[in-house]
Image (cartoon, rainbow, N blue to C red; front, side, top):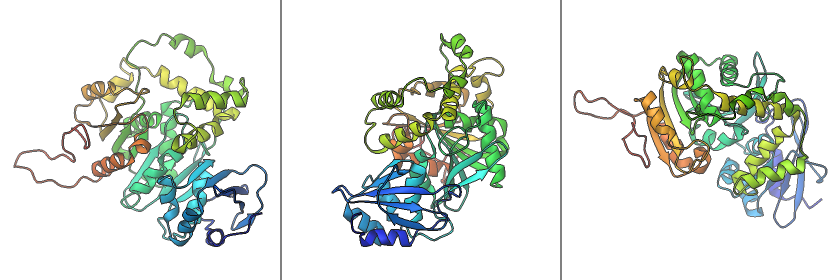
Length: 408
């Protein structure tokens, strides 16, 4: 094993097991330097130990020596290094980013923590940080709470931000036979709020998470302050020619691995631009980590099936129900989004004339692709500042523009 540098001893000495809660298993994190230097750290229930590299680590963290030294000497710089891409995390983000948080030296009660919460249906994995009005962030299809690490960091100075892994995804339980439809996921979210003793929260949802956030607000509006919906999945308005076949297809087929792992890995990385670098690479790792398990595949297929089959019209159809939404909502759209095209904006405007909209020059994941604009808009919307207006003029938390601020 390469000689142990001072920065590594510092990180291990200040490891805080209360930040990364994994009571059921020992974790192994590989720390690497581009010149080839390598160490592993084993995380037990209460302590961390430096060991020789071996086996398959849960997470691999790579940074140059200067970055590692800076992290060790500047409290709380680890997350900044990760978010600014001076440091990369591959494998399990829950473990990798959790290790960075646990060795950051931050000791305040509102520091970032990775933990589990038990609910009626499942044990759910979560990240939380901050102190203030509570926010629950809900990830998209195939993603995990890791897609909201930057959001948790950006908003935790004003809010208590909680990002969860939905059941079936990430490090949460994956019950076989669960519905994995919006109603099921909404129930899981409210169960989590009950377990955390939170009566009322703001909701942030990306993609599928946006659809789930809307379902929570439609079913239990008294529990939702405001909604920030980032490229939310919405019911199709065009004909769905494959609907009869999709209805007959059972998601339980996912319990069988029909394609070799290497083939699945290759297909996913070819479909996603830049899938071997940066945030995209980490996102692919997170997707494959769940998808390559039988229960994870079944959950993914079931959730995808319900997105396609979400009934758009009729008394109980999505677009009819959307008109009854009570909490105020901010919709953030990506002009380059090919999964939820920005054309949906006009249909939302028709259903919710009071909703606010923000268009950004990005794709389907605004909180990662345009984090500064996205998080500033969310913070302003959730904590609007009073604005002086002439008598009789209604106030609004944002100016009506389409290029940087929320549009009424």
